[in-house]
Length: 237
Length: 79
Image (cartoon, rainbow over all chains, first blue to last red):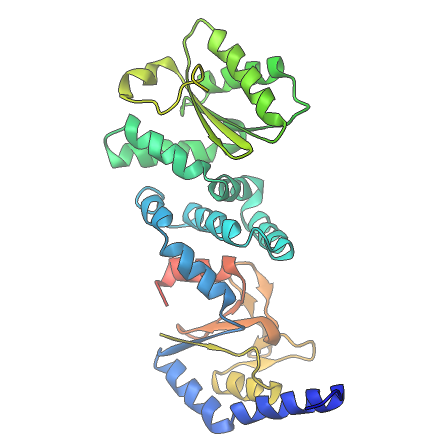
């Protein structure tokens, strides 16, 4: 082929033409009408979706997340996790999710992306024995996601966030609030949890630490009796 | 179901394929049906030939992106 770019382009175009023919296209159209094939731009996106739908995480989630918008948002969260290193593709997908489902829909996808949804589901299945009840509680949680998941920043004031958490955990029927912090915000999360722990109501707190991020699940004490085991308490961490 | 990538399909063959499926292309490169731009029903946006995905079921035309494809599979089942 040599160094001649025009020759390279010409060769590429010739190869593409040779790979396709009128007969081949007409054959594809016939197969399409027989529902034997589908056309995509390239296989990246369909492979991405097929892969996440076949994942063990989605096989668990789909048992409790009904088909429809929330299921799509959850799937988009798993897809976002897979393409996280591809910033332009990630930003494009986030834009589409927000355009379609609004900010709350994007937040459902984002908490699924960072693993909070499956962790929440694990705890809900410990709390409620009936699958229908787990689904109901998960739906309530998703409906109020912007209030019940607090993304803590390193500049946040622990006292102010603790007050917000206590207010929301009592006023929303899910009776669960999740705090998430990453990097320097982890220390702020711990300060908030210490304040909540001091409250006489006796809130139940469970902490998960993974790498540079911390996720804390806070429950009302009424739910405590339902739980037989906590993996890690705040005192131990 | 076989999945065929049309990324490298020459434009004249894309036009032929679309014609066979009862579709066309307007002067801006958007796919049309009966002279009107076809909207991806999941994102409410017109679909360009270079980014098209077409699935069976009265030739459902989508923009090839994860949200539209997941929505299609959710509604119509695995492909």
